[in-house]
Length: 150
Image (cartoon, rainbow, N blue to C red):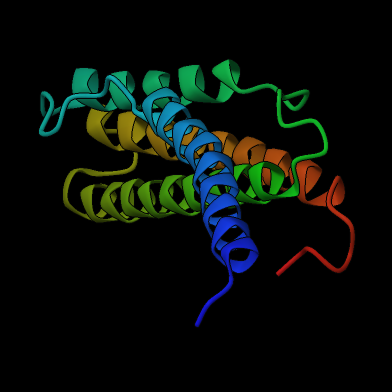
């Protein structure tokens, strides 16, 4: 037969565990809401649509300065560094896409064509934003102890 103190102990441990996990779940829910962007899916094609995407990424970068409310929450710091690293990779891919597109248009239309200049400018802007996001990721990772970095 199981003793009453064991039952009370198991019940109180279960209650404390649920209570502790509910705070983590609420924190994760708040982080997910804060991380959602207002960027449209699909967007408008062409220069204006690409400039809106670039401005959206710049706004997201500006919203999350290096001094975050993470404090010494290593999970938060690690996740934020990972998000900035992903953002840097996406921006680099976009920059590479526009650079390749500019090279193709230069072969078709000539080096001085307006579309070539526009694509090259977009590529340079994306490279710049990718470098900024990469630098932010490095700063967040530098705040982590060595045994936490994966």
